[in-house]
Length: 293
Image 1: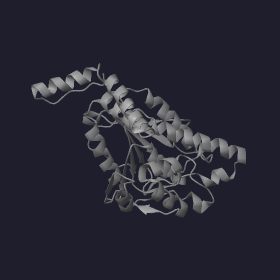
Image 2: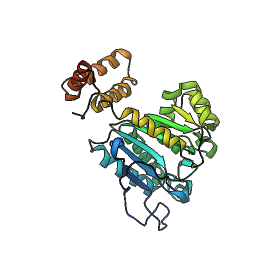
Image 3: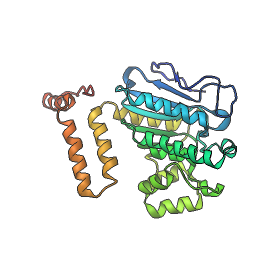
Image 4: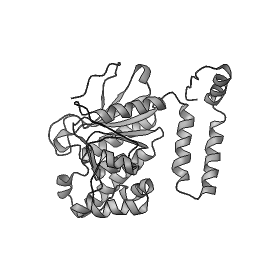
């Protein structure tokens, strides 16, 4: 059950065909999108809701999530994108191994490529992305969170790239994003052992930005992630987006090239109305009102 929030909320939008799930059962949509209203306008929530499979990454689930991202990418009103779960105790349990077991080798290859593309789409989303991890985030579930810019976990959440314990290896970006997050040696240790971490352990390593004690409703990480989104919301959207580009692209090259990338991103921000508004607000000693232009 979704907790009733005090602020006005817009209804959830559904993606993909109703009444069809990854295992063929007749159930509701697996991915839903909601735009928050009032003072939280600009925060968009993606709700992962496949309870019968603990939000496992099945064909329909992935297809609906790709469709949602494609539509949201074109929406200039999106300031922060927040991934959360509608299944208590679970963020995303990773690959749907029951579904994958029925695939031919060639089909597995195609599906994993599609899954890798999904994670790349999340990583390349123009606005900041936050994963609210209120429960298990295993295998592909952690890879999804790693594709986000920021991660918030309940202290009791359990996460890990456990693929080697299933005769697999991370195939949706885990071997690349985890070492970029934690360093090569620690990432190798975690992947080689398939070790599971609590939210507190993950924060101590730097894998998540914040770890919070879980509440009775099971959505403490969501509320902390939403508070983090609220901190980002008032800032100049183009400046935030260009900062994201400069960091992401700069981390892949030497520092001299990174400085050049920063310079190009800075140049794109110079002609914006928001830059002028920021300077005017500073001069007039008032809060700025950024419009994303």
